[in-house]
Length: 473
Image (cartoon, rainbow, N blue to C red; front, side, top):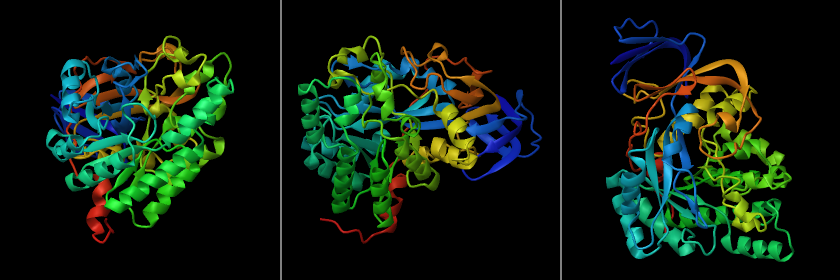
């Protein structure tokens, strides 16, 4: 099967031109202007943008919080409908079980026959014994190029202390595995949460009060120091605040291999959303917590300048009525997280590109190209080029709509961006050459997605390989 996409404005992380893309089977075989090629199907993209399929390096389709579980890969059509063709899922290690065994047992039971987007995996340390850290050396052979540790959530299985962080960083450095860290001081949060509840401050807003900016800042600075001791790269996930971003930027300026991302919600929402009446604020309970409008502006500047190198969603599909209401009298029982994977492209285009905060090339870099590099997936994902997977989004910039949960595919009972305007729309999406979205409607099937192995020594190791003199202890 050969498909020729003609006359579209092709956008990459470095270029923009009117041209054509020829797809054969699952791959892109030619990119150019006025391609003269025989094709089974010709798609006229005149007046539309041709973008690489998005890579969301931070999603949760299997996360559990106090007995409640998010919607799974049966809702991954939402990602594809929103222009994201590859997602990277965090899988929490089962106690007494290897990280890879946990991942691939779940893959067989719940993912491979359900996924509608291509996918890869992050391992998550939940059993910090020596065997777990030794296993990190074997992860690349199984296509796992990243491992995550949570500094937050005291008393929960996925909490890691400094010893676990140090051991993971040391093992990962030798294996070429990128360590990703959720940075919040768990002990201080625990104290502040107990204080809020004892004072009768149980509403969702106090989630933010109990998780102030400095608990994120302190933990970020601590893990940067731990990584420097080892001489390992470290990736800070879901950065929310200007001060945290500045710590990452400063470490990078000192020559340390420290990287970070932010998420769409931290660019668009703030702590006032947690104060919405009638328990509406629970919809916006996520960790780290939403910050201020000033932090939003600093984060927009950070992603534009490359101080943070990706914009993810931390997509986490809990119902508001049936799940988040379990915390109606105690905000600490509200499942953390919010849906967002379906709206990433539209929000960033509307409020980033169309407002001048991001160029179209910078958007593509943050949305697809660098996330693929971070995950060791850039051999086939994140770019429109010969030999790459034919993951292509045709985006029609004309017209506008209003985001509504009524039209969403994420499977939960609310939209994080309900009522927000979206300029343009995702018109067509090709997943490895197969048309899976047509005229804005998802037409793919369960099982269309496949596991994409990540390669070790990804982007975050570039500085490590170049700077041999990093001090180690």
